[in-house]
Amino acid sequence: MRCSRSRRPAATLRSTLDVLRREEDVNGSGLDQLPALVERARSSGLPTTYTVLGDRRPLPPAVDQAAYRVVQEALTNVTRHAGKATASVQITHDARTLTIRVDDDGAGSQRPPVPGYGLVGMRERVTALGGHLRAEPGASRGFTVLAELPMNGAS
Image (cartoon, rainbow, N blue to C red):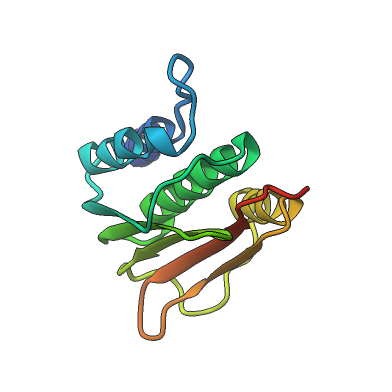
């Protein structure tokens, strides 16, 4: 009996993560798909806000895809590690850089994260484009993922 009770929460977590990681086969998965991703996060029980700052401009496909994947993985990590939390997603467009910031107010660890596949994947995507990624605990609680991608999509 004990095993079946522990499987239930694990199955629920896997189901929630699958919702957040689901591929957008029909519509692609760039920044145009972020409202749908945020809505899926909300529907899975993660209160999430989404803000876009600056003038939107066409992005190189690699930058567009990487930005989406960073947000997707960051929200997945909030769901997995932050406990009861809220999340905010902010996308800032400027002439030279696309900045992605995902913050949560959860009770995750205050120690620097042990890089797992998600953080490693985010870092690889961002640095392959000539960008920078910072992923770290907040000053008193929560976690921040901050990615800066050059608008030229350098590789």
